[in-house]
Image 1: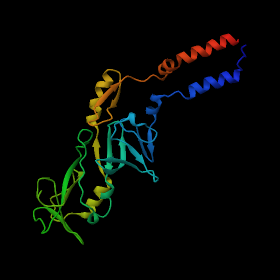
Image 2: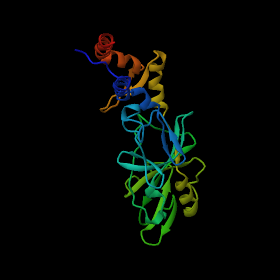
Image 3: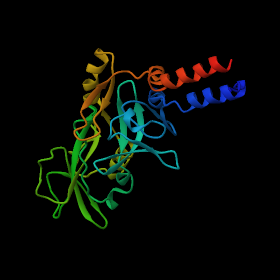
Image 4: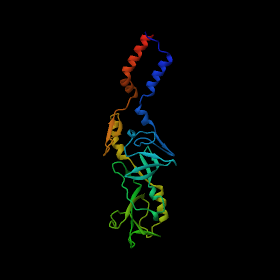
Length: 252
């Protein structure tokens, strides 16, 4: 003996089926948003799942609505993201304090992801005694003389030293280093672009596929067919739907 299914029960069954339907594409349509930073591919973080971007480009949002990115175990503040030119402005938190209180640590940006913008250059700072006479220098009250050079091979035997990115207009030939100007420059950060990644993704767009990355190093580009939630629904639930509507035919 069959008992007719009420319309409310049928609605509940169908709603439950659709409600739990995973929609991979919608997860990647979400944007990362934090303060004044909005970002999409190739980044992930926040509401964007890891498979929606490059494994190393996770954006994080702190309680102060500041965006950060960890590169080679070094934290960088993300000051600006330009999704049109695929560039971003980064600043090292440890370089935002008084220059004379800094700890000299080096960080290398992975060349397979980032390129330094042509508007910026790398300079090297040295902590040496006695003062290096042929370089611009400044004497800090506690740690002593600091010298700077635009040539990383200058005085490479003088330790500790570290490199920082500054605008190409930054002068390294002055006899006395303008420490106030240096601190202002470091606070504004530097610009990098992600042309390496985006050029690698062009092959996917040519084949009308979406661009993804291997989860393991060296995180090579992997083209994937565009996901169709409706198709996935039909594949996984066709059998159930057939039985469900057969029951409706019997009961009615």
